[in-house]
Image (cartoon, rainbow, N blue to C red):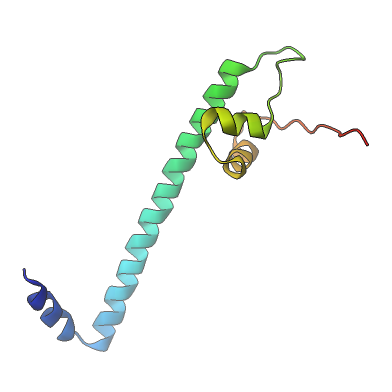
Length: 100
């Protein structure tokens, strides 16, 4: 189909058909964006969890890793690491009290 035929087809549509087509396109693009985000989050969760599992132990000195350290090791943005760690059921946050 040539570009002229496609343009001609869209010009022949009524206003309501154009609106309906626009809504359908928005829904499809939104679904792809939502799915992409879910897949990326799932991959990040797995990568962070596996890294933590391999690099922590049940000892006082090796029990916790900082968000910055996790981000550097996994190549994931710190904000994404923080978000994933809050949502993951098997990752627990450690709140350090800073010396004042």
